[in-house]
Length: 158
Image 1 (cartoon, helix red, strand yellow):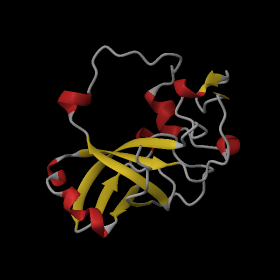
Image 2: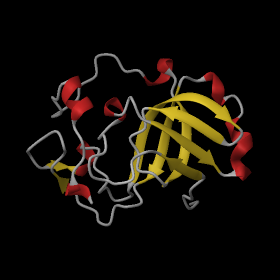
Image 3: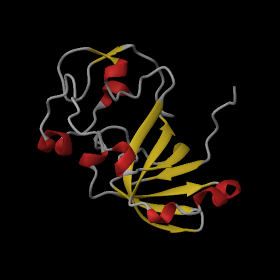
Image 4: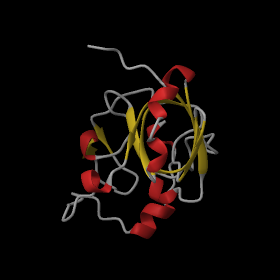
């Protein structure tokens, strides 16, 4: 098994865990940069043709693991794997952001909901034909688009 090592760093205007958007839907106005380590620059070839990308990253400020959590958009305790909580066993996060442009090893993105200085683990292109799921269900999560856009984080996952 290969160890998972960061391939770069995510930069954003979010310098504190508190009051951050809880998902990219709530971060539409926020721009960020993803700086990929120089040794991986060849891997960025052909990425510019995609409008959106997945960022996989380490919740590097998560200090504990909880199997039961109370999500931001709920009052009930849920299993961590039924949430997007950072307190997961492997502290891995996922966000879909808009790719605005690439300049060398720097990706300029829109809709960033990630803490400034977050270690980047991987990038994958969003492909609607692969990734859009029609007739999907969202389990317990019943929040409106407005609630998702407006909800900000607090200290519960610090």
